[in-house]
Image (cartoon, rainbow, N blue to C red; front, side, top):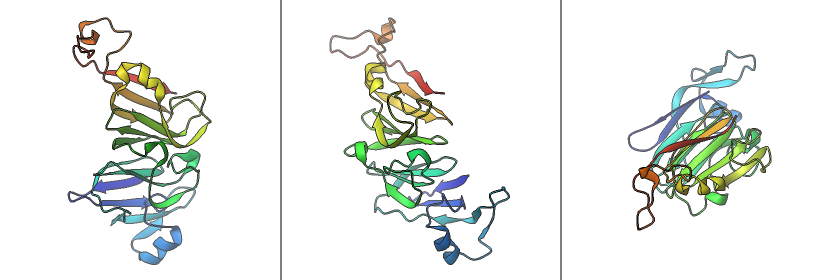
Length: 219
């Protein structure tokens, strides 16, 4: 588990399992903090835990505007729309192109280059990002299709644009969420299956009104 907090003036503070807090390796954390600040978890694994909140050092001068945390990894979005991730890299859920752990925040690039990230959601083993143009990117565990494609490998280690959403709901997403093994996306419309007034096109090719519809994929 990870506990994060976004302070009013921008920095992110974190505490809990040292594998995931973004403050360095286990040896680095033990050298930085006293015995009163770290302890051993009550789980069978007996992992080292950081007890008090500490500021996460980000490799950017931009303000952090949004954060999200999963069971074993964390994400932060900057004011310029860049996405940083850190934690345990199982199944590529950090989006860095491998499955290795990352003990301090690292920017996610790949297919996200040139896009402005506005929201991010953390599943147990995968990650979903929403960009300002309404595109959805997924990466990490895809064993149950939670990254939006049945042709991708079980482990997607870099951001993948869910192109199938381009043919439904007008191709523009306005909200994302994910659970342990599934992803949910709210599409703006028009929806090809909807014959109601909201999805009828005006003379300029735009729908008469928004029709938010949830699409879900995965297990």
